[in-house]
Length: 442
Image (cartoon, rainbow, N blue to C red; front, side, top):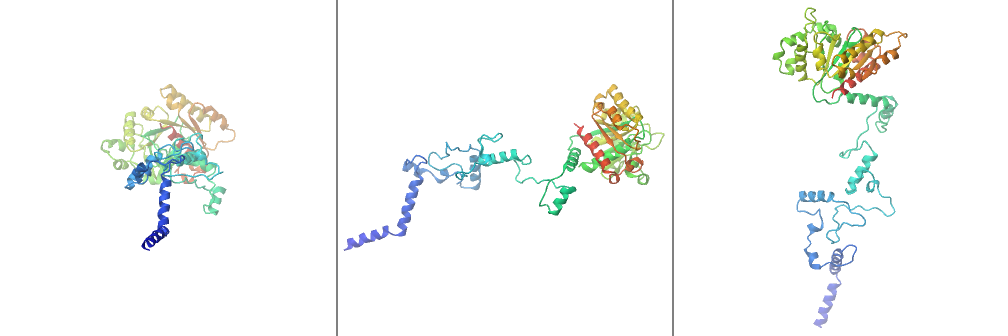
């Protein structure tokens, strides 16, 4: 009777839910140690010796170890269908991320090993990003944020953007893209200090107004303020054109002669600013107004000023006055990185501009002449009898670029030059000149 009771007890224990759970666990454990694809059972003793950290590359004692292991695994070549990734034949994948593709679905383009520019041995995520970079030029492999399309300014594109509260962004049009390109060229970061000389053989054809207009444009788009120097020996009016005659006269102006007298004591931008004038972010050095000393600036003195300016400004413009033979001219040309040759829509102005370029080439400044920018200003609104195309053709081919500034009362009156009152065509011409200047700085 006791024997029957014990037998019944053992039978009851085998039929309990706990016994079924233990049986399933034992069967699952036996299945996990089966080698993938072979069906052979490994040695039980060796399977027991395999630790959990050896079977899974992400199971580590610390976060740093797990991260290091994940980075190491990401650098391994991705497994192919013919070579499944296993851990020493134990049937456990060494890749911490396993991607499955539904049967019958087309493979992603990033996984196409034969695609040009896609790394064959790179992880799947890297291959996807490389393939996307080929499809989308604006996509950056090192970016975690999708690039945002520039916002359109004005026009029907801007109207659509405003009406949809930014929901529909068609991007900027061709005109805005050109304007943005000019702004990028003007604002290019420079390594060092550069100087552009503005000169002509004839007066009254827009040399000083070009210096002011281009200087204000550089100040508008560049992160560092430019400096303009009035080296005109004939009582130049550069500062009056930038500030207005009334403001300049009431400011107890200091000139380039005052700067030269105290140049040895100037050791900071603060000290230098006492001898300068400011039209917004454009900093200016006024020319000498006394006729008795206005023509006394020598080449050596100009080079001393240029050396001082180069320590604080990356871009400098020098208004040279009329002619190329006055005392300071050799120092100006010696320190110039490029030139602006001012000309007008008249036979005499075009011929003088050409003569200037030829004189430079014959006197050791051939490189400056070849890279010069000729600016033709329609200052007097010439009549229709003047063949503008013929004048432009007469000057083109002997300089790097020719840019025309249209007739504008804001320039022609000989008074204050401000960008706000200029025509859009005039402002664009000054942008093109400024961009051409910065392009020439190498």
